[in-house]
Amino acid sequence: MVVGCSTSEVLGSKIGTNSNPDVAGEIFKALYDYTKSKGLYLAIQCCEHLNRAIITEREAVPFAEQVNVIPQPKAGGSLATKAYAGFAEPVAVEEIKADAGLDIGFTLIGMHLKKVAVPLRLENNKIGEATVLAARTRPKFVGGVRAVYDEELL
Image (tube, rainbow, N blue to C red; front, side, top):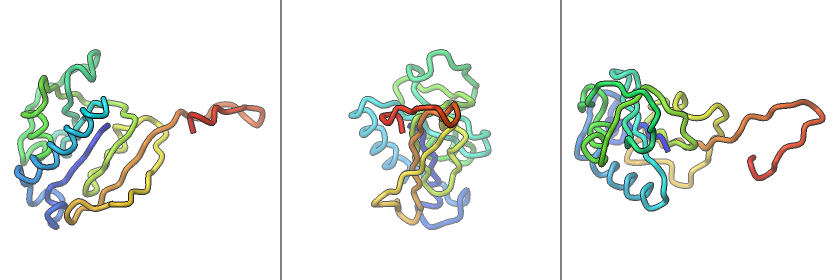
C-alpha cells in the first residue's frame, strides 16, 4: 500500500509549506501498525523534491533498483523521513506498482499504483484539515465483445 502525505495540509496549510515531523510520526505509527497487522507492506511516497521516490522495506521490493537518498522534512517530506527512520531495513526506490493507496492532502500517488486504479469512497475522508483519497487496483480488461471476465477480480 502506497501512501503520500502532506503534513502541511493535515495542519491546514498549503502543501509544502509547513512540514511537521511530530504529525508525521503519529501518522506513520498508525499506518505502520495497521499494515503490519494485516500482513501488508507500507510504501511512503516522497515529495516532488525527491521526484516522488518511494521509501519502503527492502523485503517488499527485493528486485527493485535502489536509489541513494535519505529523505528529510524539507526534501522528501516528514512522513518519508519518519518511514526511513522507522522501517526495519528501509530502502529508497524510484517506483513501485502498488495494489492500493492513500493520498493524504493531494500528493498525487497515482504514478505508484498498478495501471487500473479504482477510487474508493471513504466514510472518514479527512485527517486534520487534509482530504484523504483512497484507491485500489484491478487487472485490466482485455478482449472484445466475446470476452468473459472473472467477477472475483472486478
